Image (cartoon, rainbow, N blue to C red; front, side):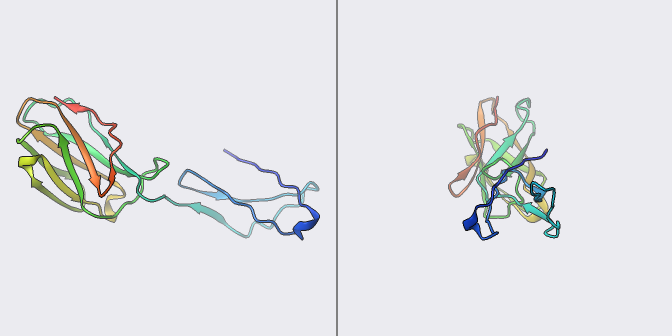
Amino acid sequence: ASDKATYQFAVGDGGVVTLYIRDDTIESVNISSKDAGGHADLDTEGFLTFGPGVLDHFVIVHDCAEPVNSWERFSLTAKDLFNNTIPYQGGANLIGILGTSATINWTNIFASGSFANANPSQGQATYTFVSADSGIVTLAVRDSTAESINVRSMVGSITDNDSDCTLT
């Protein structure tokens, strides 16, 4: 895809103008210019790389299909404001459930950071993202009671976007 903008120099510009670019996607772009006579820039600046933003929320995805006392795998992904996956490394992520279960257990399926089935009697675990995770980890939860629970994630005031479903 190509986005274009047009700027007409004014006498007061002195031949110099500053333009601002915003990109909501993690990508590298090539900036070029051409005047009406077809004269192009020397293209010596290289590519401009837009990196990820800061942590805004987490996304939890799972299939909601496990029976009682079976492991339900889910992915936990760190996202920026524009929903780009970010290589988040940060504080302990409290993972828990919204429900009444005292029979919850957690396990690490595919994650490189520090994991603890911290407080299973309250349905809680902790996980700390590390660079090797690239912002995505796979964990699992098991409930030995037939009930509805909602998997949640939180670091400080940053939470998941509650787009996951409820296990039954």
